Image (cartoon, rainbow, N blue to C red):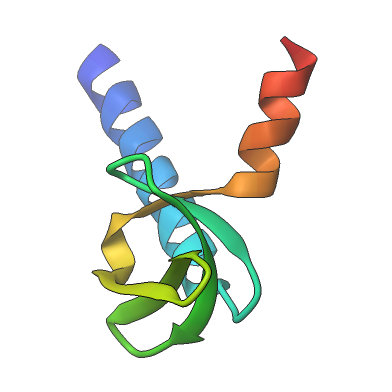
Length: 79
């Protein structure tokens, strides 16, 4: 029973992350899995162009986006 519960919870989390990643649009502020904060400048099918400083852009895999930076800052302010 416990294994099934953990598996269901994992699948639910994966679906939520996919939904979040699919909803990313230009102008969103995000955090990568590596901890880099940036603003989305372009969204393609599998990659995102992220501006991390003035005129400094990196191309990252869409799956490496971890969270919305605004949500993260809100959580930090609550603590």
